[in-house]
Length: 134
Image (cartoon, rainbow, N blue to C red; front, side, top):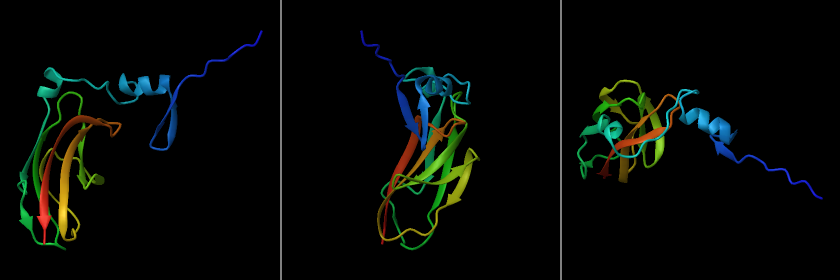
């Protein structure tokens, strides 16, 4: 009779292989994270507002873009990350303020701010604007 060994599923996270147990530890908070929630009071307690630039703004190319924002991280969030065109460009430790991007080329760009937990995993609370630079 052949013995078949059952292997635990593994996940690739930021270049590190994790077993199911390790992934559950991150989501259950033993490694600084928390289990993602969907709907309910948890998400209502968190919010992101981008005051400037306004969605659809036309700005000058090859200049830094000044972003004004306000964040309420809620019980699952720790800080926020700033993304331009889907790429992380900054970690923002202040929950309210301004940040300037490096100069952006001409064209359409999406600027997003996402609330993340201590493990730098987005919790699903975010805001974004699209700007056109010429």
